Image 1 (cartoon, rainbow, N blue to C red):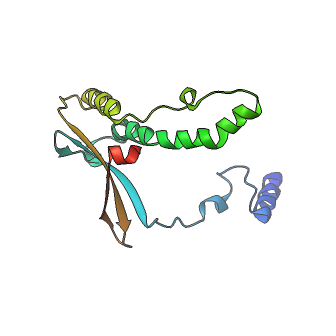
Image 2 (image 1 turned 60 degrees about the horizontal axis):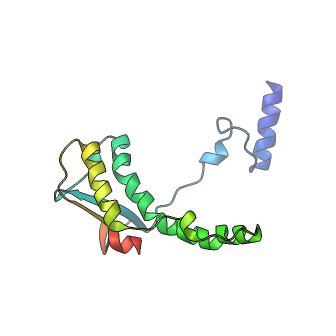
Image 3 (image 1 turned 120 degrees about the vertical axis):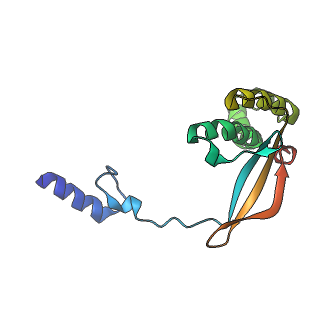
Length: 156
């Protein structure tokens, strides 16, 4: 017990060294401030906006995560250009980006995502419309801004 108390006193003295989150309060004491803008993917299936409150968190993740992953394809291309290409050249390996990145093809993704949603939602899906909208935090609520991006704009 004395060893535990001495250890905690040492950790609290250092304030940057954390051995276990169960014994050190300092890692939970910072206030999380709201961001001025939050980006939200809006998915319309058969002209009906899907609401996250109508689904379990797991099912909502199944709906939204493929869109987020597709949207992140461009950042993978910049990662290749910034880091992987340099590393490969330093190792004497000459290759192109096609082995490390995937092309951002909206038409292919849209068709595959429509088929995927039919399985996730267990209902026929005739049309899917995906947009990305920014919401501004006013201090008390989130209000939609005029900035709305289509899937095609997100990909380019």
